[in-house]
Length: 419
Image: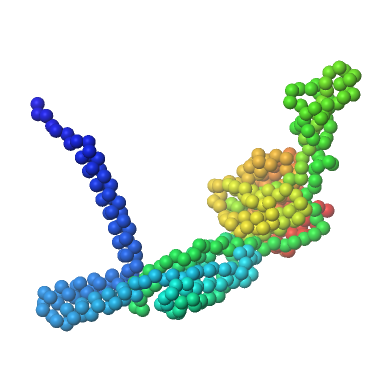
């Protein structure tokens, strides 16, 4: 048998250390090369390839003209590369006049760039992404301390959350061979709220406090008296009934029926299979916003739920912000009936439930959804149907079902429901 000599442990550790250092250096060099190559435009690659081909061809064939053409192209590329030297030290300020607008309103903003350095900044191009598009501004040479301001308008024909920014300052050459972008600002969200209508005279909810509707659940502390029970450890001594205690010799405490508080729940279906058109879906969003704002004005607790999640609705602003971000979902993500089941599980003591859907929900599906909602809650189903001119009211089981064709019809529709 032949014996093998293993390397000493310090040598193994030294080799591993050199490998780690080499890996770090290689990663940094790769990142730097990637950053350099990202500034080279496709036209520059073409010209550099042409210069190499012309040089090789000219040298091999002895054609001076091809060699001179290769030299001219190489000099041009090098001169254009010098335009990337230097830093564009702009101070960038992105200011939107309003971060929240309604669909169709004009959204304007201002982009201010200033030169805080002691040297002049050469002309550059500023790119401002707006949603899926982008705007470009040409900035002239800025002397030290000088500012440039650009005004812009954002189209708001569609509801949504539009991401404005981040601002990128682009340095490049006149021929467009090289381009280097510097990100100078953080993006700003512009909320394009759905259209809503304000209406008075109809109180959609009803309080269940002192005159509330008692539930079947029993409670140790509420306002609706139920019976007297023998004291159990943990009962509140404030509810001891002293007359019965003195008469029976056993400590007796009051037991109450749990009463329901005013809890207004809106269930908005965002399933694409429930709506005939995109316009119907937008109408449903506007209905949810209008009804929710009215309930918030009535100082009620409002919860809004769509398939997959609950929307923030503590205030009117939060409600409209949440509705701005709602998008159509695939039919497999949940039906109206499944949405009603989630509402029943998460808000079992709801006093009023407004279920909003489209015309593709059948009467049977709507009946099944209403049957799954919390027992004792008043149920109002609103169907968005832009093909009708007058709101139509019908009954499905214990639910009032009203079809609405336009946002302006909501007050009339609710008058029919609450009449």
